[in-house]
Image (tube, rainbow, N blue to C red; front, side, top):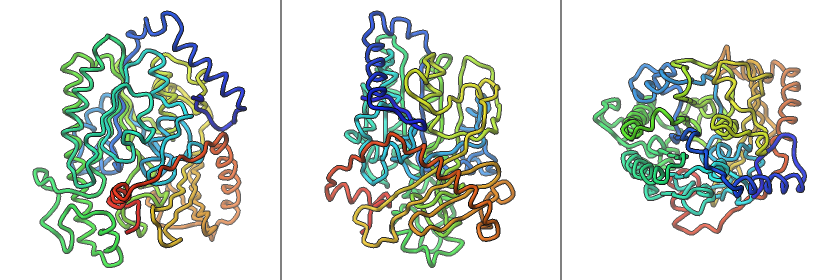
Amino acid sequence: MVAPGHYEGRSGGALLAQASALLALSLAPGCGQDSPARPNVLLVVVDTLRRDHLGCYGYERPTSPTIDALAERSVRFDNAYTTAPWTSPAIASILTSLYPSAHNVVRGGAILPEKLTTLTETLSAHGYATGGVTSNWQTRKGSGFDQGFELYSDSQVKGTKHVSSPDVTSEALTMLDQLMVGGHPFFLSVLYFDPHCAYMRHPEYGFAAPPAGRIRGGEDMLELRSMMATMSPLEVQCLRDLYDEEIAFTDASFGRLLEGLDARGLAENTLILFMSDHGEEFLAHGWLGHTRNLYQDMVRVPLIVHDPRTDSRGRVEPTRVSLVSIAPTVLDLVGLDPSELGYSAPSLRPLLEGRSAGDAWPIYCEVDFIPVNAKHGNKRSRKRSILVGRHKLIRDDATDRFELYDVERDPLETEDLAASSPELVRELERALDRMSDRAARGAVATQQPVLSEKDIEVLRGLGYADR
């Protein structure tokens, strides 16, 4: 295993030395004997959850009472960004603190390389009991995302039309009881999936009207995309309404997880990090779902951090941050030094404590996506973006086309300023190239398994493969 890291790069010898240091720490006499004093960590990711569909981020519809209540007693980041607009690269960045061009989990079904050291492995080496529950096929057992977990369940990976949130919570609570045995602090990772297409009906919430046009609920993404050119505003609104019902349904299951944490007497010593891996598009820029674009509704995500040891009730942190900071932040909060362990993304601890985090980092996102069995070259998406100050530049590397937006004046990114601001485009392009180079240093090779027909069918349901 090698320690994670990026931006400044490392020699092979330095990587080996860091890996040896980590191993020595894990094997040292008495290692972990004082670890019960460290807080537990609960990391919750809701797949495909848009921040602007949550009450605590200003949404008027009551989709998220549990999440809103958590935000009221936590630090809510108003400008958090994922690294990529789909699950595999985004979750890989959360676990490794690397951008996609470094960890190279950029293809449908790609494996998280074993040579990378994950947050889970680092915590395990320092005395944490580790468990994970997933409901997304991309992070199934054997995908590499399970490395470092003592306990890992993917029994709720049953396709896009399976309603999984209640069982995900039940499995997480069962796993929590197992992790508590032995008295070690725990790291529990939970991935909810239901807001991901197919958007299923949950009529108890009453957000979605009766079927609109061709939309009944439960359509897979490829079916929906076949309707894009002719989809009516009423049909689009029905999709958004169904999506909101999925969010509310998942929020209720998340509430049961937090209740279970409290009932076990663990709430007062458990850090809770709640986030999304990416957002979702509803034709605002001509696309349904995700994977292709780097607009704000895809990459600006919810992030809520609750530390029961501090009094930070309802504080909103406006600083722009990236989810590459999640792993070093967790390590910092549990009393480990991220820099000594090879993490070079900034910890968010200073911001959580109301202090300055130093110079603002540019927000960098990327996508390098080719659908499995792609029949046409235009299905590939290779884009990068950088956000500096109020301006965001998106470069399509396949066409060398630029888009430029003033996200403060134009948060929905409806007015492309690239043609009218060539000097600003050139300036931001230079910043984009510098950040791209830094993000890719130390890149590992992609691990792409041989996919079975069953695997490809799963990817089709996710919208990641052609028919």
